[in-house]
Length: 212
Image (cartoon, rainbow, N blue to C red; front, side, top):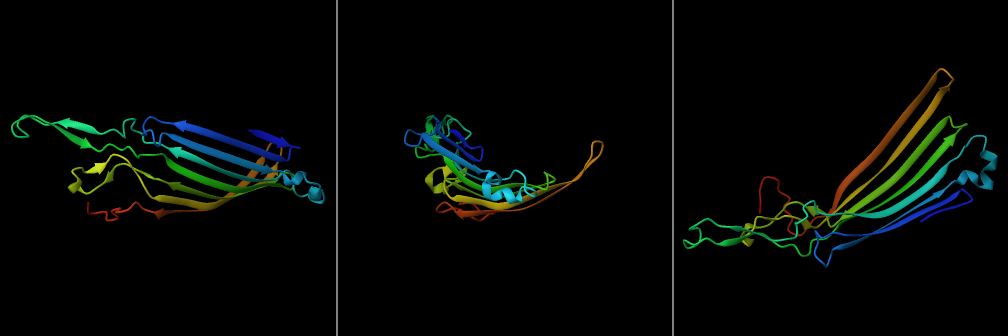
């Protein structure tokens, strides 16, 4: 849906439903909504006294959910391997090699962004600022080590834990000279970004030099 009212109130929304055979029937479908809003506040009557200094500018907001699936189309299926002659009581045998993953599901990424775009002094100065956050849940680990006492070394894929990414960014562009034959502009950009694990799967091994 795209909607614009009086060329100053903007709305865009989406809703997507995806299905992937890489998942079992209980988690095959993913629903991913999204919405963005914009407000050209400089078109409001109360901004008219400032038109000499502030050109077309906008406040905006966006929020949405997206999903990620395993790269292996057969990730959820168990696999088997044939042993050589004499490996099992002198007879060849079929042995399981990987676990069937019926509960594998979409990795979910929920994010929002709040921003402002401002043009000042007859479009000579442009300022843009954003504050954002992205939360990723049901992280897809590939592979995920498990105790060898289970009879397997790892899961090919495993959902678990949550990762947060948040920060801010400010950009400014100043057109110092805007001549017909010579132009000179200066840009400045500064930002901060923080990545942190909100949670980890149960029994997650945090030691780098050992295995479970």
